[in-house]
Length: 248
Image (tube, rainbow, N blue to C red; front, side):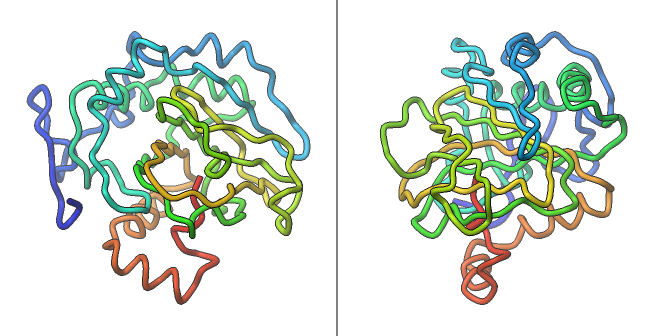
């Protein structure tokens, strides 16, 4: 399914094509249909041991069904840039909202940061393997990590994101978050922003959005994610600490 690049033509725009201007480049304002920024503003920011917040229902319930209907069909484990994927118009509109001024400003207010002009990255997961979920803190190039889960329900004990007090113990839990539909988890990257989850194998939908420190870091991140799935598996075997097993 992911052998080679595939594009989807939506409203006259080819996503992933060279020279396509994302909404972040246009720096445009918009009316948000899918994202409930008021629910984000209402949730207090937890500051210790690192800065994070959790917002159930951040994606509006009526929007979840449309986004999931147009979600990319991903058959392999790993995180994939949106340029590699095909998806429908509702998912495209959802991505546009992540790149909007309103979304950025809400996070600037919440975390007390200036994110104007910072590059962004968006990757998508559809599958989880038992090797995923190893404890990690995210790379230093990331400023804010935003995770939005799109699984209609979650009853499994594995695959639940755990924010952690340490890098050594997956059971040293601050909070555990089921990856249920519409839930947002966001945190400011820090040396101790440890997180991971217990093993799970099967479909597990999550969109990861990041503000990163520089355009060079953005390009490096996208090059890493564009590596083919077979090479990712080989790389994971050689360097597990830097593999795609660092799943969210």
